[in-house]
Length: 412
Ligand SMILES: Cc1ncc(COP(=O)(O)O)c(C=O)c1O
Image 1 (cartoon, rainbow, N blue to C red):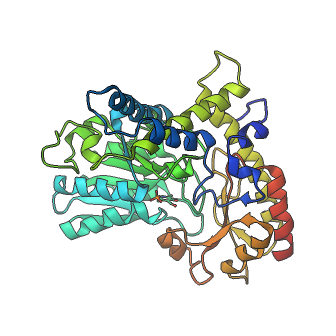
Image 2: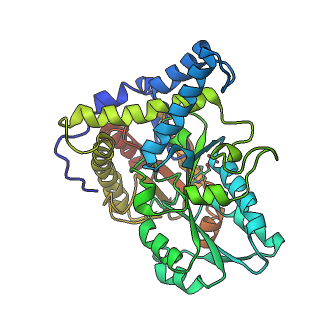
């Protein structure tokens, strides 16, 4: 995707969709959770007031509710370019969906089968796989190079064998912000006959996910970080979802996807509200583009990428100018290489000392390991309480970034 889109992102248009941005907070903890779009909230309310009945009955209101919930799944299929909405499983969180996936996998594995996980992932995409060791699986770690902070493809290749069944990897680390070459990883993993499960939580708020172009087998992310409600999605290739054992009652048909992976079903009102996320990206692209041009959602993400490049440049050039600061992630601001989640440590200063100093300025950032504990340990950063993380998204402005820099100037 290119980022030489000519018009700049219309931030007034963007920000008016998020009521919370009208207040006096600077939200720089977006990798923890983004602000929510007003139409998402409106649709939650609309569902509950207008169509709060059980799905699948013959009466008209039930059919209306069924259509609304189906529209949510269709919107998510459109967002990630899934071929079929049946490939989109909705659930309460990425952590819960990955635990479910690993449990469904379990009966298909033989003792001695191998699974590869990384030490750069959020624990959500590590523990559920590591716990399969108890069932006789061999778990191998693809480790980040502590000097370059990169996951090297050659290291993965050395771990793959004819017994590898699955590789679990992050698209973007929620600490490092680096974008992994998922398509190249998928090709390598598939050439060894294994499957690929990608955690896209730290990627999806920033760039368009295209599950077909990436050729991933499973891909998951949290919608409360993509301007939506507390919910998550798990994409799975149709033939895999059809053959995997389900996670639902014994009488639920094995071909009933995604329902066989949605015990108790997904929240109806939240599912319906997801339609407002794709509507937002579509409107954002259309607002800036010419009718008949590229897909408006792609245009929206091209604008987002371009705006993030400016945010990255502003903050990274400041951080690089401070001799005691070390950026924990790629140095380059290039938005094809990284998202605008920027972590750093300060020589001689424990990371827990910095965010509270910004609290009185209503600048919301945080420190810690962010559940990527293995990464923080591998980098030797636990004694200094992890990293300080500034996670910006497209609704953040350069002025907000400058206000942060002004405060950091006194501290770093
Ligand atoms: C990269 C990454 N993966 C997974 C998760 C877990 O997401 P959830 O809170 O939906 O379980 C997070 C949450 O911070 C994350 O940043």
